Image (tube, rainbow, N blue to C red; front, side):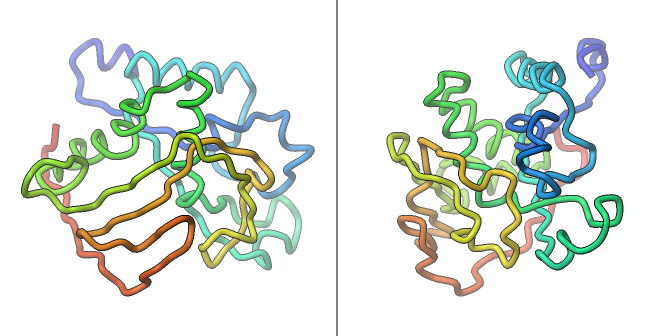
Length: 205
C-alpha cells in the first residue's frame, strides 16, 4: 500500500482497534471473545500497523462493530461460532487512552475517526468538521477521566468485548447529534431516533 500510494495510486487503508490493542498473546486470557476476521496476529504485526498510522499510510480507524449475541458467540465449537465483537462504544476510549500514553495526539484521533473518513467518502461538507453549515455532531471528551471498560455497562444489544476489565484514561462525556445531546456521562439521555441517511459522493478524494 505504501508503494501504491508513493506511485500516485488513489488507495486508502483502514484498521480496527482489535489489531491495535490485541495480539496473539491475548488469546489465552480473552478466548473466543476475540475471534474476528482477519485474525489478530503477532506483536510485530501490531507494531507495523501502528507504524502505518504514524507515517500516514493508514488514515482511518473504524469500530468493525459486530454485535453477535452471547448465545451465538459461546455456543458450539470455536470454528463454528461467528467472528466479530462489539466495537462502536469502546473505539473512542481505546484511542483516547493513547493520547495519555503519548502514542497519539488528540488531533490525530480527530483525523482518524472523523475528518479522514468524511473526506474519503465525500461527505466532509456535512460530517467530520465543525465548520459552519455542517451537521452539529460533536463528541466532547475528558482526557483525564479514568474508568474501566465493563461489558455489562455497554449499551449495545450485544455485550461481547475483548476489552472487558481494561482500565482507560480518556473518555467521551457527551455526545451531540444534530445539536441535541443524546449521551451524557456515559448514559443515554435521549434515545429518540435522530439519524438521517448520508449518501457518499462518487470519486471522493
